Amino acid sequence: MPAHFHFLLNRLRERLWVKPLIACVLSLTGVALAHIADSIPVDWPVPEIAQGSVIDLLKIIAASMLGVATFAVASMVAAYASAGQSATARAFPLVVADDVSQNALSIFVGAFIFAIVALSAATNDYFGKAGRFTLFILTLSTLVAVVLVFVRWVDSIARLGRLGAVVAKVEQATAAALGRRRLRPYLGGLAASGPPCGLAFYSETSGYLQRIDMDALQHIADKHKVRIVLAGLPGTMIVPSRPLGYLLPDSIDSGPVAPRDLRKAFIVGPLRQFDDDPRFGLVVLSEIACRALSPGINDPGTAIGVLGSLHRLFDSLATPVEAKAAEHGRIEAPQMALADMFDDVFPAIGRDGASQVEVAMRIQLVLGELGRSHDPHMRNVARLHAAMALGRAELALVFPPDLALLRRRHADYWAAG
Image (cartoon, rainbow, N blue to C red):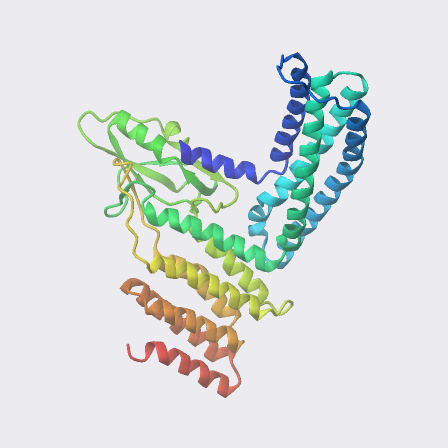
């Protein structure tokens, strides 16, 4: 269940209204606490705070925070639009989920609500001596929080919609998803043995498989004494005619399972998500590189930067790691294929960058270095894609010295093999 809540929490982080709503509730709670302070007996003398000073501070906050919050929303929308135009629309959820911007907007809106409510209460003599002192402390704390958050937010918003920041966010999200998958290569289950077989169950809707609740499936499998074989991993395109998985009896006591109970463990939606789908992050990085290589933008430097991100991601896959023990012994899942991950990125970048020698050279460098890993499967896949990238470049490059330089780079890594 914690993983399921984590998935839902990430979806909430992509909604701009959640944190401002929480800030508004906390603001109202703060005003209520100031009133409650009047009814709490204390043994030490409470400083006398003039009501006028508190009201003046609250008026300043109320007058300024609405304008600041409006400015923050406008700046964030501009950054989101810039990210979608310069990078790719698929990276939009990561940009929206930026904690610094959401926290800043929440503090600004919360401070405005706090000032309006507290001002209305203070002008109507709602607070006593202790309440005014508590409200004064809360008001000063709000001012300090607003100043600190504003300074940090200004630095963040200057980078939020920039292409380099978007690439970094996508790389970070992809690295996190790859790290989780490396620790649980079969989603916490067992490796699927052989081709899928058994009684198939299907989805009633079409879309992308976003998440599989392995805990729920394990509970169903234990209850009915069956084994469940998954037909796909998160990121798979799901249609009603394609099985979600298969049921296999585990003993003579195995009982029937209602398909609707199984379908509840599969979240199918119109969009792919980064959480449990590492290949989606790779696809998004490839899209950013291909957009940068389009004739209208012609930014090979961005494509080279993306290739550096891909190098780091695939290099981490070549580093041995001890996977966690299987947590769901009645569920079998396929493994994410390394060849498919290479197919997600290098053919598209190799096609669009074939006519630019600097991009073609960097592709050979990245694939050549990956081919030097200790993983023989990665060496074979990298060799195949290096040859395909060289073949595309040979058809696109028209300057013979460039082509000779590229062939030399390819031979430096692969001629000995």
